[in-house]
Image (cartoon, rainbow, N blue to C red; front, side, top):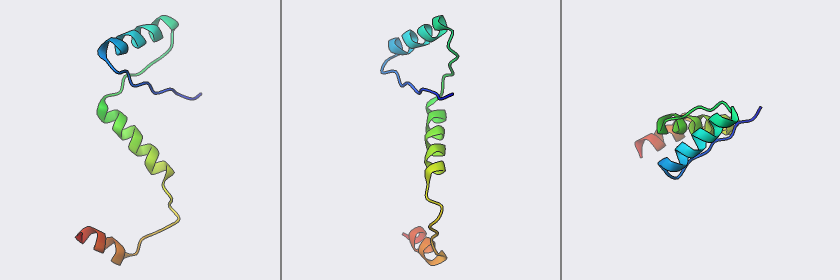
Length: 65
């Protein structure tokens, strides 16, 4: 089953949505800002094009600035 990510705009909105989900019997999990960032990064990493590789010279040039 798919999931829905909701970002409330205020503490009141957060409480309302949390109570609504509880009353509806819907399982929910609260993510910290760090957890949400990690989730976003993992999605980006999953979708990255892995068919194109950089040479060692290109990599070193980028690292040197």
